[in-house]
Amino acid sequence: MPEPLLETKMEDAARMELTVIVPARDEEDCVGACLASLVGQSDEFFLLGRDWELLVVDDGSTDRTGEIAKGFAGVTVMEPARLEKGWTGKANACWTAAQQARGSWLLFTDADTVHEAGNLRRAIHEAEKHKVGMLSYSPRQLVSGIWQRALMPLVFCELALSYPPEKVSNPELRIAAANGQFLLVSAEGYKAIGGHASVKSEILEDVELAFLAKKRKVGLRFRYAADALSTRMYRTTGAMLEGWTKNLALLFGNSLMLAAWRILDVALLVGLPLLAWAYWGAGVQQLPWFTAGWLLALVWLRNLWRFYARVAKSNFPALDVAISPLALPLFAFLLYRSWFQNKILRRVNWKGRTYSA
Image (cartoon, rainbow, N blue to C red; front, top):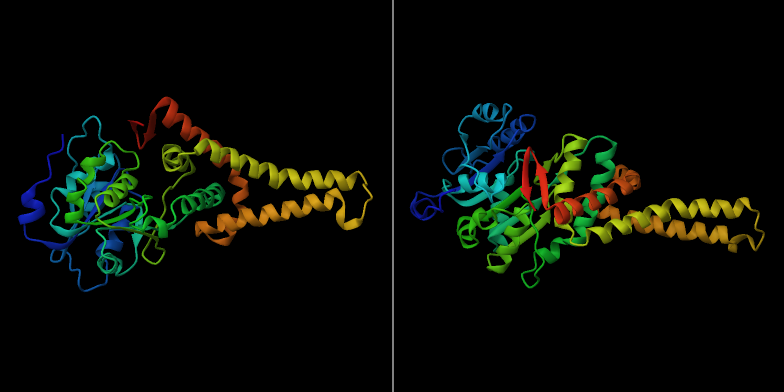
């Protein structure tokens, strides 16, 4: 089992300003860009090895992830503690590195992220300005292929509606969320919430850490941050389907109801114009602007406008939003599939590992 948090590491050791922790498992196609963006931070305040440190946890990769990470000067590459039953791989990797961290702030960031110049120091200043012990960013999402471009806006608009950043950041409200792609937490705050050991079995460890931050009055701030970093969450359609199958039912407690609403969207967006066309084709001759066909067309236009107004909250490009109706059946299917795996089978798969849900 991973060792308990070392007091000498967290309290008595010589402090740095920041420790960046990158858990990585089979990320050879993206870890290089991530580390280059971190090592290349232009702010003179961060001189690698002096004011901050960068730890990469190679979590049992079978590709060149570790070799690529070792090619960056000043980056410390380590192996995680043995993965014990009841732990997820990511929680175990993050916890292993956190015990060695010397920073007053800890940044957990995924290997598929790319950080803008000066992002690290600005993030610390933002957390200090708002007097919070935890700051999380939702990155700008990079997508490729028609199914990613159509599906991702649907998912992220629901996330924006379910977890409004202004409510998540309000300490008076219970609602909490965070994004593990960028999770900055003070060393004291991390200790107060018990670190990743307190969420060792959680599939959505980032959201659970956010709940603990609010519960224990650490302070939480969450926002969309295209100005800070970007990420390509899924490099293939298969990985996207596996990832959202793992997460959707946990992100949305009403996943079956949400699936039903998305099927209704399909029925309205496709069925209403077909029904209107059927009325026109039957030659119903009432007052021209008040025939059933025209009324159905107006209802369809209203639903189309409401649909796009909602999906626009996803922060995706207009063209991706425009084609998002194509993925409505797929989104409904993934919501059901996620519910079935999480609630009925009680297990999920991710990166070659199977976890109890």
